[in-house]
Image 1 (cartoon, one colour):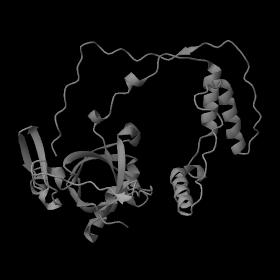
Image 2 (image 1 turned 180 degrees about the horizontal axis):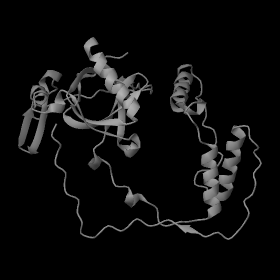
Image 3 (image 1 turned 90 degrees about the vertical axis):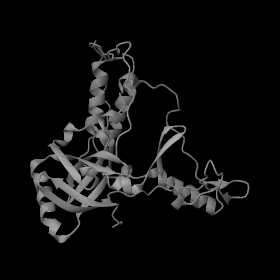
Image 4 (image 1 turned 180 degrees about the vertical axis):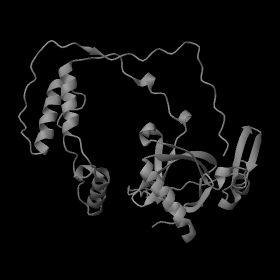
Length: 300
């Protein structure tokens, strides 16, 4: 297991559970460095003081908040660590809610929480089993990396997982992105529902749920290393930008989904009938003159 990224405690009412936090995910992406193409010399980022015009070492660098061009307030790591904030030392559980009450767009990366000592094991297992029986998740607050954050605690196998969450005001309003009103027939909606039904899975398992981009990139690097021509990109079945008939595309997709499950892939044409057209409602126009107040920086 990787090294812990943070140590603290879970605060649950009057119960305190010392824990260590470990990353729950790994990054298997292939990374690149920047090079000067003429001689393949490594291009590095230098940290230069704008006043002295010289490169500075890491121990000379600190944090500062710019109030104005001429006024910078220096803030040390020690001052941040010693702030009178309960969540600076603990993950404070604020409430328990059903998981489906939380918009998935708010949920971020995950971390495993493990008991920090043998004496922490009993309260750790207590809250884990209580969460399992209640079928709920805990919403908590904690302070990491210079800011207070919102978090979600849930159970995965024998471990408690902490997911970082975005605050409500960090989620952008999507109403302005909605398309104009469109007309759909009942047949088109029914075909789409059939496709959803045929593509429904109980678990995300199979070759299609693997990282093909990283595998393809590894093949490109291997070919270039061996002096070979990198593999070519396969031609798309439908040229980019070409508009296809929606009904035909849906029917063909349903047939392919059936065939992939070994079912009868015969496409049965939907009977042509005059169907009541459904019009998507336009998002209500925003009132003129309404301005969004500027946000103040969050306190850590």
